[in-house]
Length: 230
Image (tube, rainbow, N blue to C red; front, top):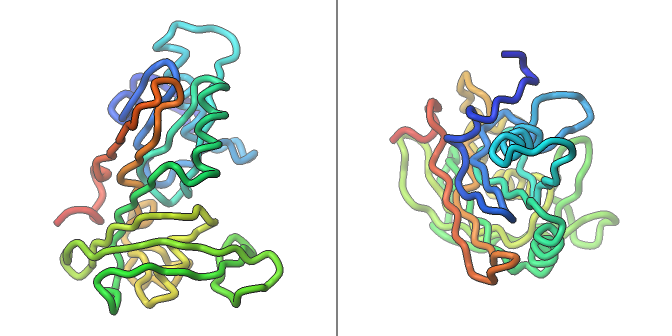
């Protein structure tokens, strides 16, 4: 199979939720969420092929990512299968009416077992930098974390992401001296011979765009990676 071939059956084990309006997929680390213009393999095109086969459709298929996660990150990506669903979910995200929970393994335990982090971040050269408030272009970034347990020589944190800034979790945890395992860009020392970093989009809580019911989607840890083995 070529690097840009998409086989619908291969996506099936990664599907977390599917109906006529939504599709949630457990993205592997190292895979782009959407086409970046480089022609590299991406999850959205793969999911579109799954819909084409599942619904036996020809021609254009509506499918849009409601949110994105970094190529190096694994976990939940939610797609809208209708324009109505996309519009309503985008509005919920703007109004912060959805909940995104991440699990992350860091190299050093935070000084406080749990805390709220508030920083100002500036996006420059494919990197987020912590900066002073008021710097032109800087955005306020807020997350809350709690320490769950120690995993070998790493520490498992649960992160409740309030804002969705570029590389936010990576930059904020590095700023308090707890870089994510594998995240060399933000100062990590521990690197494994595998794609990605030890950051996983673990749980997503959203209101269904048509049923108006809360749905909770949870993504198992990636298989075949050493990060998440206790």
